[in-house]
Amino acid sequence: MSTTKIYVPGDAGALSVGADAVARAISAEAERRGIDLRIVRNGSRGLYWLEPLVEVETAAGRVAYGPVQAADVTSLFDAGFLQGGQHDLALGATDGIPWLKRQQRLTFARCGIVDPRSLPDYLAHDGYRGLERALALSPAEIVKAVSDSGLRGRGGAAFPAGIKWQTCLDAVADQKYIVANADEGDSGTFADRMLMEGDPFVLIEGMTIAALAVGATRGYIYLRCEYPHAQRALEAAIAAAESGGYLGANVRDSGHAFHLEVRMAAGAYICGEETSLLESLEGRRGMVRYKPPVPAISGLFGKPTLINNVVTFATVPFILDRGADAYRDFGVGRSRGTLPLQLAGNLKQPGLVELAFGPSLRELIEDFGGGSATGRPLRAIQVGGPLGAYLPAAQFDVAIDYEALAAVGGMLGHGGIVAFDDSVDMAAQARYAMEFCAIESCGKCTPCRIGSTRGVEVIDRIVAGTQRAQNEVLLRDLCQTLLHGSLCALGGMVPFPVMSALEHFPEDFHRSVAERN
Image (tube, rainbow, N blue to C red; front, top):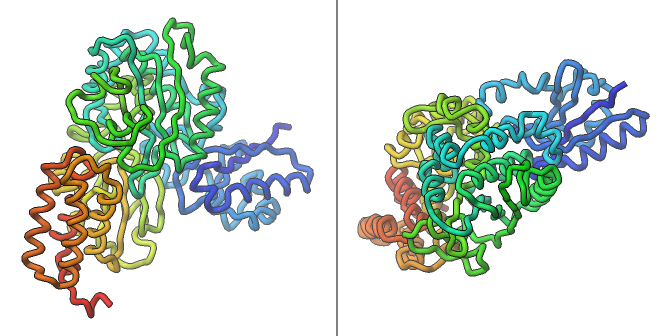
């Protein structure tokens, strides 16, 4: 008789709502009943409103139950959940859950399915097939596959990945580096964390393919210090990859060396900007560098350095395994492939949704997000993190597409979606954006360092009713200075949320003091 497998997520989101207690309760109840089972701590499937989501491996496939609390465990055993029995928390076959069935999971295909620390499990689910194919290609052929796929950087800038890879390949140096930007700091984003905790080998594989492509022998994962669970998962996976010959001095007996390690960040939002990240990796204060030269030519320690974010690297194995055309066939226009979108804020069904580009924001927040958690009308959504524009309900039908969002003054960024109902004060949100910039600025350039502080003061005067017309003119002028004069995107993009709030929700800036109280 085979041992039944029970999957209980070890994902940080699931842990925050009691997954460890659930795992302990299942183990204790099985022992009490004399039942032999194995608990696998998988990653999250991304259905966060149903966490902890417990899955049971049955003859008919995996069956899901959720959200499960420790107090539910006895009744689950009584209901025969080890055989997929009926219970109030039963969700049926996991693969049949409509929320999952409607997605196109390419990058996140294994997340929530595999044991994230098991190399054999990764290999059993098509892991390292991309690397094996890459080993048979020349560096130029690998880069061409990435270019032909249409993959653009998933960290926010959406720069064509192939151009960056080609630049680094063409650079001549005795040492090159690969750096994964895992300093995921945008509000409402958690795709990087989910991937590193739930499928760390796919990031390692993607970085290894990149090393073959550009001729790098050493890599670093610059990881947000608030992600200790991801750190442990990555370090366990790196050790397993080294033992299996997928990292080290002779990757898969190919003659290519690639050594990889995790470096912890120190909590500065600005270090999500690639040159500031490099300063931090070199042991200095995180401050933005002037460009040119770009990091692909002169980056870490002055050497050519290929920097991409976690999702970008993690997408590369699919492209090398299935081919550039298979990836490019998803999406629309210049937005090819899929994007992991993270639903947060005032939504009934927050979580991660991976979709091909093209559907509207309304489809995303209504069909997947389930509408507002409060039941009140959604008034605004912020797309792209704390520097993204606030879009009003009239713009919810815009397509999830880099160019379509840019046309309405928005951006996709890292794919974070934060929803607000009609109780939100958009003047307060605009003030928060300026204050955030003031706090997180590295201080190197005057528009960002001083302009953001003055911006908070100007918004306070507008809200207080002090010379509103004059101060609105001043705020718009200040935003133009930040937009065109800042050294990096922190100062250069803070006008997006501020100006969008002012344009679409002017009434929130014009309320009287009595109305606010």
